[in-house]
Length: 176
Image: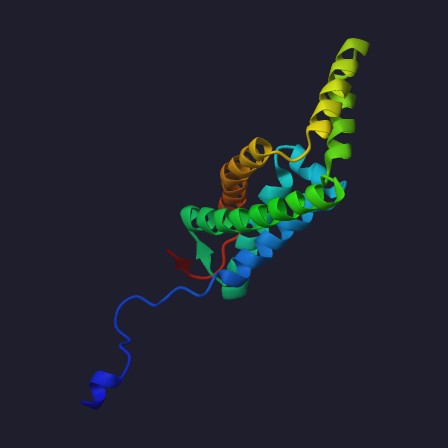
């Protein structure tokens, strides 16, 4: 009877908790996405998002001395990307609604003008598009597009960072 009350030690061992690692990756993504000038990393092939997924998986691998499969690294990074991206999106919506400020907009506009505004006509068209977008403000359609983009891109690129970390950093036994 006493044996029935004891927890079973048979079967596969439970993997360590990855929530702290997901929070670390999400925090990196959030900070990079919200802080001006730092968010330019996301304009260059989503490097900030990839870095957040990498940071989460890297922390998990080092904290528990494990080797992750590429799929598990991707899952961990994708969850960090989803959490960090949604947090940054909510803060961005709040800043835009309350202060009419969009994190990174000015920096992205200057970047785009430098790259694509090489002719006077192109520069005028870009500046006009920026003015129209600013005058439009926060709309339901812009919120939906931003949300869909966040739900797709952040987990995808952060998952890529997690998969890169799982193949670049290997410690101890494999955690499947």
